[in-house]
Amino acid sequence: MKNPLVALILGILIGVGGLYFMLPYEPATRGAREIQPEAAPVTEGAQRVAAGSTLQRVKRRGFLQCGVSQGLPGFSNPDDRGNWTGIDVDYCRALAAAIFDDPAKVRFRPLSAKDRFTALQSGEIDILSRNTTWTMSRDTQLGFDFVGVIYYDGQAFMVRKASGITSAVQLAGATICTQTGTTTELNVADFFRGRGLSYQVLSYEKNDEAISAYDQGRCDGYTTDASGLYAERLKMKNPDENIVLPEIISKEPLGPAVRQGDPQWADIARWTLNALVNAEELDITSKNIDEMLASENPLVRRLLGDEGAYGQAVGLEGDWVARIVRAVGNYGEIFERNVGAETPLGIKRGLNALWNDGGIMYAPPIR
Ligand SMILES: N[C@@H](CCC(=O)N[C@@H](CS)C(=O)NCC(=O)O)C(=O)O
Image 1 (cartoon, helix red, strand yellow):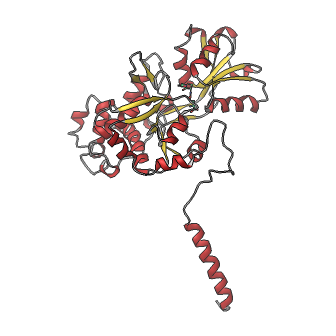
Image 2 (image 1 turned 90 degrees about the horizontal axis):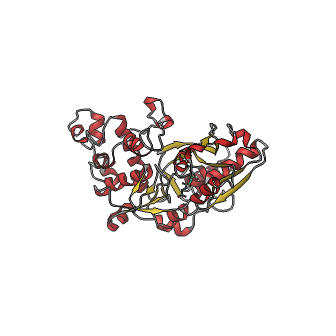
Image 3 (image 1 turned 90 degrees about the vertical axis):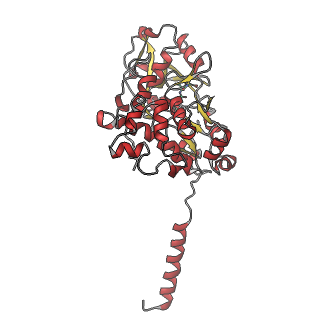
């Protein structure tokens, strides 16, 4: 550099630029971004809750607080005696098994679609496992981390058979019942507006109100995630008089979410989900788990904690996956037990089949 002044100015510019890139990344939660109507932005209070070890808090408390729905068969549904069943419920039981070696050490907190996010932000629950769609705004503006996909879903419509409607495009001018605080409301608006069709939406805070409004004929159609349609149809006066239209109008990747700010807890939640899927891929089931513990297959040995220290790395015991599978089975077992062909919902694996069996369910390896 011939001119020392030019060299000095250049040096300052490079230094300032370098410092800028070293600043910690801070997502803009205020102002700049448009918040979806369903979402309330993260508060400073919520960020305070997130500090510290959720695992330690859960252990000290002696049970996991798991946010679920108020009743959605196949996903999270209480019976008359308050026993919960469903895919989302079994996922929380898997977490409790990994932490406590006891799938019963979990309390289920029923939450409406509208209240679920504040319950997670405020620390009322440790994890949200409630047929919740992973969207960018929920992931980036609410102070959450989604840890994966437990069920690949998509939104569809239900109508009365007697209406003669066989396709969603015939719904022009229709009144549609749905629930507030959901992606469902937003997608239905996109669907009709995008096609220049007129429509009316009746949104209810409680899903059972939306269902009964539709069932009483106040709406021409009811819309939610396709899995939810099969589940909710079971609650109707005459389920067989209703049909699900063929169009899937959105992507609804449903998955568990945790508060941002505790990477160890996010890892535990993420790898519990991955462990369930990897266990299915390796044919490790609740029935053969004890034989599998003697396996020579290195992939099985790593998953079950005979090689490496994968559980210990996230604050769990080495046999965390054996505990999980013994308690709730692998992902395929959970699917079949709760929503599969032999259940009243009768849902096929479809997209939720493993990647090597025609679906897109794929978990990163444990190694
Ligand atoms: N996946 C959508 C919809 C979730 C949702 O709340 N669906 C309703 C209709 S199936 C539901 O679960 N209702 C049961 C309840 O409110 O407890 C979302 O995350 O917004």
